[in-house]
Image 1 (cartoon, rainbow, N blue to C red):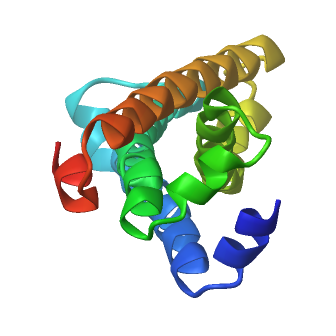
Image 2: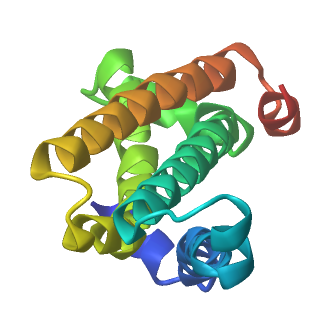
Length: 173
């Protein structure tokens, strides 16, 4: 909880949140305006608004999924190796915390940070939900897939951070 408070007070966090929300939003607006434009409709025959929003959902889903897939290891790859470089890992290991709890705490810190980004970009997906093309189960399945992917990629990043002793090597791997 202490690390989350510290990271959210820095300028880097709102900038990353703005990026994670702005990129799907801008690409969604471009995709939707392309799908609804008269030139697109006359070229590909008539397409309903619901079908256009379905395509918008696929584009936004793929983009958010790829952002989460690539950003999660980047956030987690240097966690343990940075503690080792700052010489605070030995102090943490001598405490009453087990190494498993230390690694899990580091993973939960990075995953919580990414969940802020994911929930910040939800209004773009709820636009598709409001039109009626998606149901609540579709949104729930999407979120479940995203949560599982973030935990998997995050645990891989922590593994890389434990293997490499240098933070630069861990992040570049």
